[in-house]
Length: 389
Image 1 (cartoon, rainbow, N blue to C red):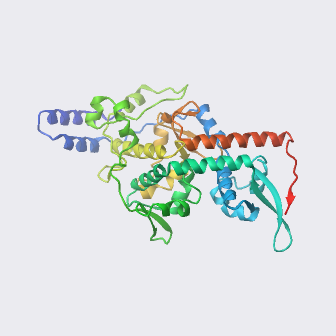
Image 2: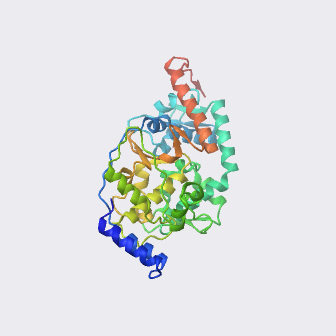
Image 3: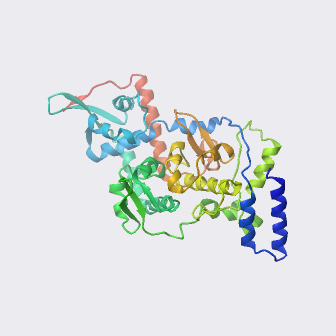
């Protein structure tokens, strides 16, 4: 629960505002600076349905990236594919060739001879994999402006409207961008993006045009459906919340959560430098930033480390990712796959996305192929019969 003295102070300010002594917008600012950050710890409860979302995507990012790479050349030797290993997200102890050979219904192995006369494994795509890839390309072309806006909004969330390419690289698959977006996508929109050299000598992407029409968060878009009329008037939007089965919320925590939901909502696209990071209102703004970031992803999830890499660019305080543990009704942290994945709970009904982007459906088709290829290979339906070229 919020400290009693602070609640009384806010009540007094509210009475003064109603009677005309304090203007409405001043009241919100004064109140929000009085709410100190309450020390509430909520337990983590396993959600099997959301864990299955993570496990079902195991290998999907790597496979899709490899399909895109190979489709550009027709056939690539393993040493060429190894150059892109850092983009695949595979375990360090897993050989890339072993991963590729696990899916013979997608990747067709052959051999070429290098300059020294040694036989080198080389891989092309099956007709089925080529068809799926072409469907994905068509979907991206049809929705190119939408993906442009996703990248714009990501940059609009940052302090300087700039992000290092390295940071975008870690999010590009989640955002639905092509693996080579800096060459195949960004140059198509010179009015929006520009490459810049950062002070640390890295390359970055800068937003050239700030579109006010895009600076509306998902929570604000859905206000007429999700929010109470009084909350809309007061600007105290509440986040959709749901808890996993077996999650017991203590009365003290429930009271704190109800009060926290009533606090002023600061849009993630607005400057929040005036907020005291030690307050619950500042925490609500941080939750709002991550809520919006997850909505920008096509699967409404991303690895926790990707948020950590955005801290300085978003102007967030240290240890800001603690909000995930403090708000298990909004975010779920899956610990599957030797990493931590943050999932936006409102976006899922069990293991299924409530609203599926066409790109998600294509990825699900590829995921089914991965599962089938792995199963068929274990049954011995594929024989290693590589062709030497």
